[in-house]
Image 1 (cartoon, rainbow, N blue to C red):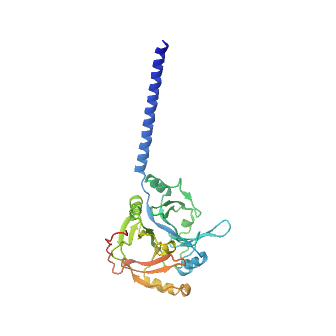
Image 2 (cartoon, rainbow, N blue to C red; image 1 turned 135 degrees about the horizontal axis):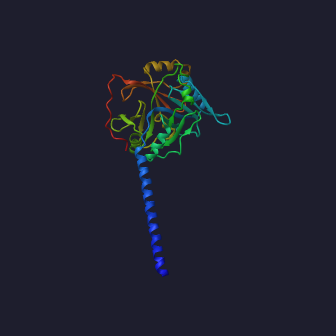
Image 3 (cartoon, helix red, strand yellow; image 1 turned 60 degrees about the vertical axis):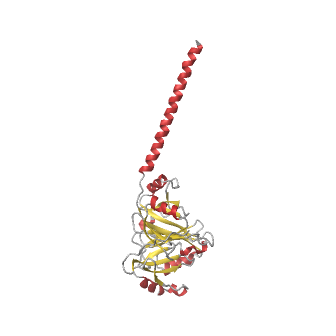
Length: 329
């Protein structure tokens, strides 16, 4: 009789265990479905342009003079460390673009700190990137000048800051100010990044961030040198500087560069040569027509970072044909 009573009890426990396991499986499947649906439904918010390029300086004050007095950019605000030493400063190109300058952390290293792209919803961008498998922080942070931002790392190892300008941040509060007309340019059209492994870098910017290829060029005609990728919701672009092997850190300033648009390169060069700073600049400013058939000239800051000044159109207003050369192998 006791055995008879225990059998149904054991069977009842087995049934409850089976139902519990079944419920757990259903819950797991529901959670997995929710995650998959989340990954599929998070849309990428707009990426409207390049916000800034951040550069390290060996001689901070000397570089400030280069960007401020020679190139004519005004400093709307600067930041200091707790001990009062300079932390960074900002040179305003226009209401949405700046050049950030930092004192170097180590000598004889790459001068590029990071680049920044602008979105109108940093938190949504964070969720979108997470849904694509990109490593992101737990949340976007409010920066020291009042903008919402977070950093990611692209496949080539470059730090890319995602920034959203906030209404009460310093960027928006300085709208229409600190642009006296003395600056050599009022637009940064692109930044250059060194790329040695093209495929993952290309897929990251095109398939995940939504950039569109607009042109590719070759210096030699036999090996691809550059690929231009435009932001999805604006006209700024990133220029891949293609290498088989990366140059030494001290030599990367010619590749990790920024480009400033000017209406006329000859007029811009004449203006620069008339500046008092030019007497001690120590370099000739040479004008030339690039492979892209646009008139341009190169400047170099005290650490060798290249500032390309370039006209917006080709010399005959006809597009330069793209190269079909293979990338470096």
